[in-house]
Image 1 (cartoon, rainbow, N blue to C red):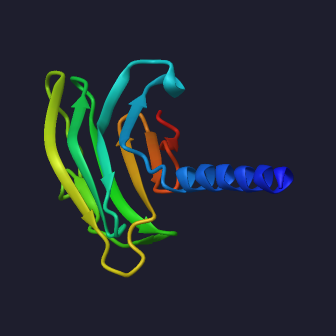
Image 2: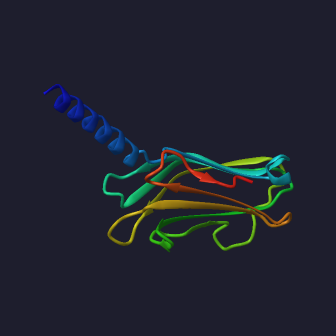
Image 3: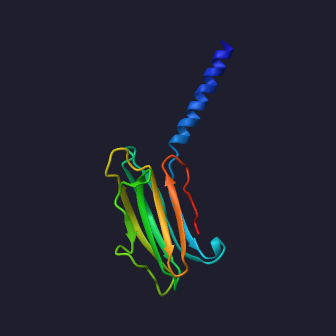
Length: 155
């Protein structure tokens, strides 16, 4: 009996840990493009909070803020994906392509952005990309719904 109780206790603990890990979706994102391979001045950054719907059909990005340093030029893209297939509207800024180049340091509050999947299965992960065209720098992060945090280059 004691051995059975120990086995059941360990099984319950492993199940709780496994369930907790599977549901640990990222709650925030932060992408920065930085000179010098990540050691220099920040060109631009994109930050915000994330919430994943229980149906996994929609990911809501809130308090989204874009920062761009004076004299720099950036372009960013956000897409919700299932595997390598884009399943949400593809957000690009500036929307018609090109670059955003402020004359002084600028922070733009985008507010809330919803990414809703156009097929069953929902959004598995969200890709964020930012480009500094003048200096040929690309930073990216990937936020997978099965991970607790986003990962990427960030420079």
